[in-house]
Image (tube, rainbow over the protein chains, first blue to last red):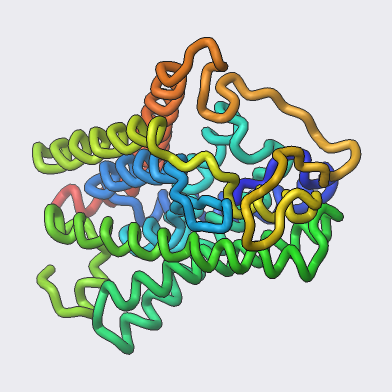
Length: 216
Length: 117
């Protein structure tokens, strides 16, 4: 879902950059206020894992592939949507500058879609579902799916405004493909959360453990 | 950092590196959801069938152009899969370094009164 430079006029990219920078500054403030020393290895490992998994495209049929975005995963594990903005921004800068995956002028839009929208949708839908189900998998899976699907539809609208995609066809195609890619997002998100819960439950956000009644 | 956290960091990074290297060989080369949609908009793909061409003709006029040092996670054709591995290992290392470094600089420091008690 990385928008390349070619898909958007520079002035529109600049608008998304300004909006993205507001969230990046809030994410830096989150780090200053909330990121304790014990969480630093989690941030480093999640940044590496999101980078690696983002390059691992899996086929989703119809001649199309997709990969994890990671916004929901990061926000759930670290307990804040701003954690997703923080880590996704770092990863998107590396991908765009070093590997040409996602543009420079469009990086603001990519930060908004995958970091901000992915992080906020993932975090709040996870906690809403967790309150109802008390089950981490049944909450994280659908939350991760939404954190892939909704940014994809927003991306379709952005590219319609950029004059790149027709609105209806763009919404349908982005929706259909990312409804399938969202399943990858859901499965990997649930797997990684359970992996961390198994090896180092103390590193998972305390609010999650309180809601489902596991120690800590 | 205590031993437990160091172990988590090393194990986590090694797993990420392994995924990154395996991806060079196993990742699907089909276009992703966004490129597939662009191919539909370019008339080279239908929603359900694979693309018949690879030329994405849509785009904004006068857009920004940037050439990255390791375009598409490779070092060019001459390098083959070795170039892919070098690119992915470099990227994963940069992600760890950026994540650790920035988190370390910004980390929440214990308030002075907490340190006294």
